[in-house]
Length: 208
Image (tube, rainbow, N blue to C red; front, side, top):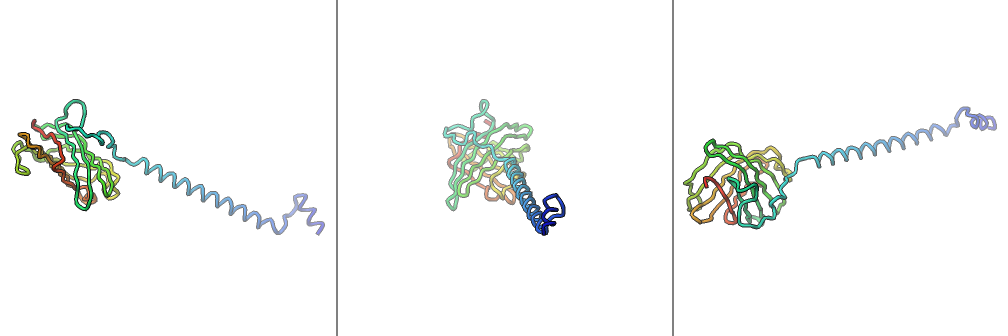
């Protein structure tokens, strides 16, 4: 017994308890490594989520004026609208951009902010106009009408993914009637974003 103790003290053969201690140290280190890897993975996932495109729709969201969304001067097309929907939902939408009816070309963006359930989507407009008319009839009144394609560019609605396609019918009555409307249609996944705005709508649709 004395010899074993002296050899251990002098760096000789380890006691029978040493391997167990080494195993516990290794298990402890492996546990720390696993925790670090998990934390790194969560941080990476969080970073990816924050890097995902989100709708930049704060501009003009609280606008309460009577005109179309402000931009550089008066844009060729634009609108703002609020609406109550079925099942207690409601929404607010606005958009503006450029248009050339001679070449059937249009550009711009639209934002739609829905409530109950809450969601916000950003939408790219055009570039091709599928139909336009200066003598369209809607809601019993004549007006200007444009139909064009849409593409979702950012979304907080998990079912409505970026890249989903759709189209919109823009209508602005004339002769001072003020019975404008905007109606959205989207492909599968974004069906909850299919809304008709009519009544509380101020729209400018060319020709002016």
